[in-house]
Length: 146
Image (cartoon, rainbow, N blue to C red; front, side, top):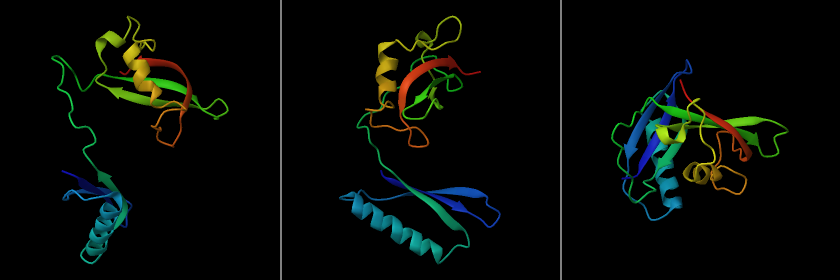
């Protein structure tokens, strides 16, 4: 079921989140109108501000199950050069990285076909962006997180 995630802020700049499940709507414009209506109604009953509203949709028809022995505390970080970033670097985290993608030194195996395919989503021609809307021109390395 779709959800709206509202980030609310108080006068001390502390934040809290409010998740609201909503009925499936016909299109994005309808979702946006619904979100604005909820925010307008909420303004009438709370002293907190709303600093952000996110629409959460179930994008994948089917997820996948956890692998036996998987560990949420195990992750990896991959770093690359930002496209048109004059040498600037950016990174992305991969939670629960598969042990087969980590070599004996704790470095990620960037030449793995599956890892390459995932990382291409964040490259210049890909559809995904890193936190500042950046894309990567070249991946330079990755390591297992501590």
